[in-house]
Image (cartoon, rainbow, N blue to C red; front, side, top):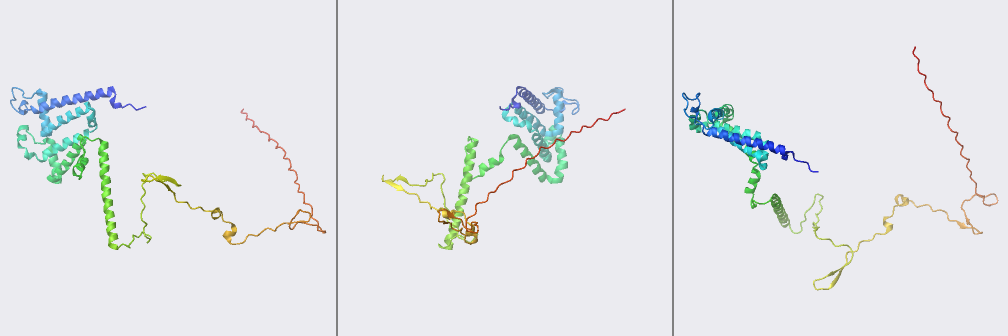
Length: 356
């Protein structure tokens, strides 16, 4: 039984949809407050303030936008964009991987602020309109504690690397595969090809590359043989000539032993006889005897000669004084004594001690 995906249950989907809608709505409100921001809407920035509130987010929107610009500078516009994209990730399944990549979003946001802080002198108009640096307070801290130790060039390389890594993880863009497809010679893949077709095309390129390498090695070996003369043979590590390799195509069915009849192109029947196998006699494969190993002859037993009465004469048989054969002795064995049964041992029971 297949395991039920907990991410597709109605309760989980309803909670994800709620978060997605809340993020998108918050992103729209924040973007409107940032776009329509006027620092003279607040009494803290202008006395007297604007009679008519320019910020479409109202007093709360004006205050939030003012604090966002003070802390993040122009990078505050990145925050609602990220919130909108992550809201889509909670609504649509093909962007659901974004739910677990908030850290990369924070890295992208902070590197943007740092780069704006490094090059805030390039944006003099932002300081006048926002009453802060291009990177805000975070950009000023990055410029103070990171640019000075690493230098402008080193700090820029570090922050650009982190920015690109965060961007690749947030977009799922396969940069390495894209570069290989663009720079590999002779590669022309259909953009609508399936992953299986792309894998087959990749395997084909690898086989072609290996074929070219083997052809180059064969050409080098042939040149070496020609340079050494026709009588020169390649020698192995043991100093003996290397035999000619035999290539057998296993995809073609092999002929079975025995004779068979084949039909030639002219229509005649031809009998093809398979090579006869060598037959080894049994004497060559029998076990070796002691005489074969030690080289000693085997002692022969004395032959029995028939007696006059027709019975065979036994060699070295015991006879009496008259030369008559003694009868064979009768061997009797004593009966085995019968074992007595063992007496059972008495069982002793300990008496309990009496107290009092």
